[in-house]
Structures are given as C-alpha cells and as structure tokens.
Image 1: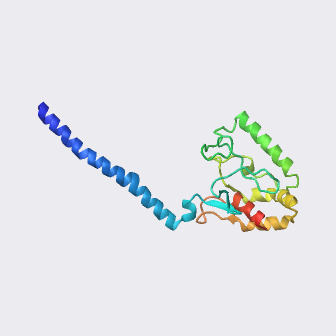
Image 2: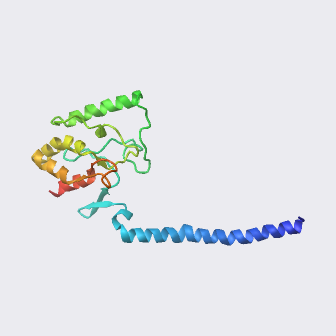
Image 3: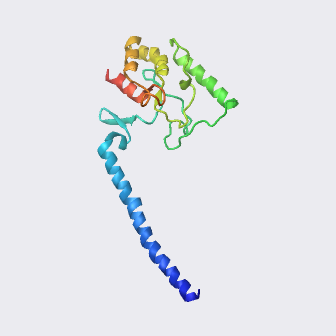
Length: 197
C-alpha cells in the first residue's frame, strides 16, 4: 500500500468516524437523557425531583437521604460516616474492620450517648442505632430503633408513649415485594408526622 492509498484510507475512516461521533453525542448525550428525564417526570414526578419533602412551604429534606437530627423531640437516624456526617456528596461507610480499635471505641461512645439520651428506653439498643450504613446517609431505621427512642420523643412532646408507638406502627414500610430488605421506618417522614400532630 503506497502513501496515497494510506492517506485515502485514513481520510475515509475519518469521514465515517466524525459524523458517527457527532450523531452518537447528540443521540446518547442529549436526546436519550432528555427523553428519560421527561418520562421519569411524567411517571415518577416526586422521585425524579429528588423525593423532596416540604413543611410550611419550605424544603425540609429528602426522604431518600438521611440527615442529622439532634433535638430530643425528634427521632434520630443511624450514625453517619459520610464526609463529616450525613454528607450526600461524600457517601461511604466507616471501612473499618470488626477488630478495629477505632470502630470499637466509636461504638462504645455511641452506645453510651444513646443510653444517656434515652434513659427510659425499655428494650436493648438496636444495632442500627450504633452502626453506620454503607452509604452513611441511610434515611431509614428499624422499627425497633424507633420504639427504642419512643419514650424520649413522647416525654419531649408531652405525649403518651402509646400514641408515639402507634405513629411508628403507621409508618413502618414492609419488605420490598415481601422478600427484599427488612421492615423499616423513614426518619424524616416520621418526624414530619410528629410535627403535624
């Protein structure tokens, strides 16, 4: 193959690849995302917009992203190792092994803090209140974790514990499709329901 044929071959390949690249960028980089976003907004508008929750006309959070709750009148979520805590731009678990001294010390400190802030709890501390999730921004806790906190929340809100437990029961989501995951309670949804009482 001589230089002229090589040049012609190269130009032919460029002539094919450039329009294909432009068409691919337009179809897959612009049209496809636009169509998928439009379909998502039509079929699942809440989820496509981030599952935002409002109170008093203001966004108070997303039901799919955990956040830090510290006041005694609210249920608290799982500990977070995401960034400096509950940072959705830096999701991660602790990445510490079960024999890690740092993890053991952090777990002991969390246990002590939970027992101090929930002195009237009637059940053992549920594991999910002491361990962070893999993402660090898990929005849910187990029903047991909510019940553990019920006496504190009831006392802070001057409500009977039975009323708070009944509210927890109304907000338990069962396993997905009856088999995936565990029963859970969304902390933000539960706290918003408390504020609406």
